[in-house]
Length: 288
Image 1 (cartoon, helix red, strand yellow):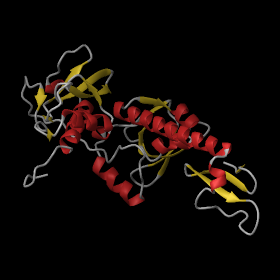
Image 2: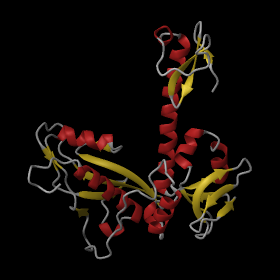
Image 3: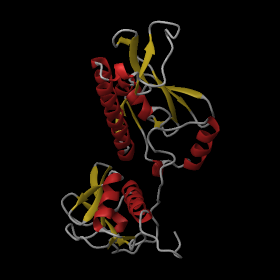
Image 4: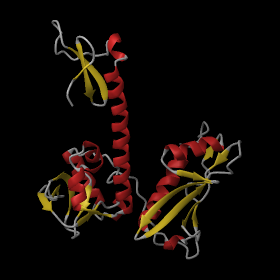
């Protein structure tokens, strides 16, 4: 954006989300200053730019969160929509370099550009640029990508960085030998916390919902909304607490047997349980 007058001798603008000033007079004219001069800090243009920076930050977070939801749900996304939002840097922060899949399983690559005409430009695993313009594309959850290890290696070679965790997202694949009537997983149960408040705070800081005695996350998969839940203790308990079992249910409250849980819901539920367990209190001498 351009520079705005901020009183005699100074102009201000946003540089990488930070209000920056420069002098307009004297030998330092045009030179960008490391800090805002005292007389500029209270100027109305500085206040407006700070509010704009806060809005832009919220906007970027919202765009990234929406893209993350598309990816976790593997929802079909209109190609035209991607083309319309692409010029916005906030949307690009979430979309650039994500693995995109077209109508065919062979149409897979890292998203590098989207044109006004609705054409997407991808770099495929062979390093070739491909162009797609189907009605919709998907941003697959990594557990659904058969060549995930190859994609990770290729991304490292290209130095690609994703704004939304996709190919480097922690994933768990559902075992094939689950007991027929099993309804819960205890792999990450027993993670001790000094307080139930601390456990609940970790859950919310990671973006999970706390409802009653559970930390939960919802996953839309194949048209079904599934909720993964980890017991974290009674809501008003002020003593120590620990993580409990992980289970899944559908929104009508019916518990799912483990064999009924979809691959994405399984992976995301295990990811939540592992993240809560990782924040536990580890006593001296115990394995971290």
